[in-house]
Length: 353
Ligand code: KG4
Ligand code: ZN
Image 1 (cartoon, helix red, strand yellow):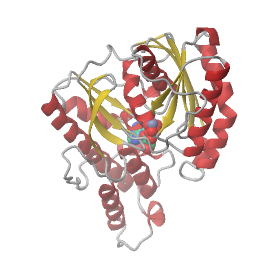
Image 2 (image 1 turned 120 degrees about the vertical axis):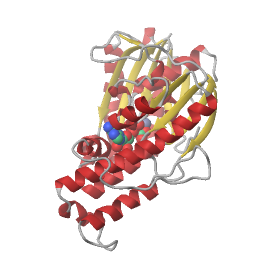
Image 3 (image 1 turned 90 degrees about the vertical axis):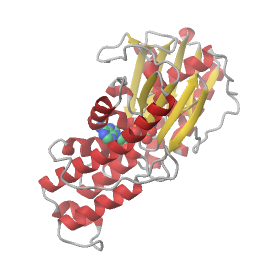
Image 4 (image 1 turned 45 degrees about the vertical axis):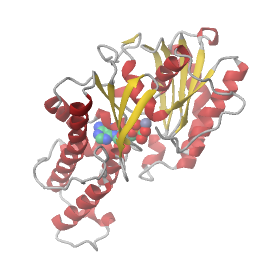
């Protein structure tokens, strides 16, 4: 069973081909990140236009790299949501058209579930990918840490899960991106804050952890505001100093210490709850997905505090990619999940778990 997966929810146009939900045959990513950098964040109209330009060549390259023609592809999977309207539309319309023209079954995939399912990939024919040792087992605790989501989800089996908790405001990746702006790190913020943090002292500053009514819920907006106040205080100003002026007044050491202290607390916030869920539900596997899964401090804290090891996707599979959509598509096809109607499938920008 070979499935071609199409992902276009944000600024990456990506297509992957996966066999039997475990073997990665190709994963092609075209990102418009450079076009957004000058604006300090993703501009939806630019993202949508870039998808239009990239989608057909990326699909063809993914087929070529997998050594496949359309005859070898058993099904098409596509991200239906969550994501940006214009971006999702391009992927979904391409998938619908191909499903009709090539006469293939079509499966609609939840982007966030895809981030977790990439952990089922254990083999590849591609160079430069480090695959997880074995497929996760159920019950499986899924930790989703991306730019749009921070969620803890307990899977009892495929397609049988409970959302334990989620963020009430900013996602952890969003908090990294906002802190990047406060201390003047270039876009994309998360990776640059984590690089700066390597030069700093993670215990330099005390920053608060939000206390939530829901046991497994998160909040990161208070932490982000605390970072802003800390930065203002460090340069001897009060809250009335516009955040835009901060990067020019902070020195390198202050920036590094703020980045390191923020990163430590943000990661601790996630790991505290992962540990609580681990103790309550005794999962056989703990898996992580989403852009922040690439963060080395998060990985370090999880390794240090969780009693059993966590397997991580290859760094190239942490961010948005078509392979994760194809992987979940394989399970949907193999386990006889409902097919999407290629003539009517619509996008769901606010799709939740
Ligand atoms: O999963 P993803 O590619 O897109 C969404 O579905 O949101 O996640 C992107 C997020 C961004 O907020 C980015 O800043 C963050 O992941 N990110 C990181 C790192 N790499 C990406 N955050 C912290 N440390 C990193 N190394
Ligand atoms: Zn994502």
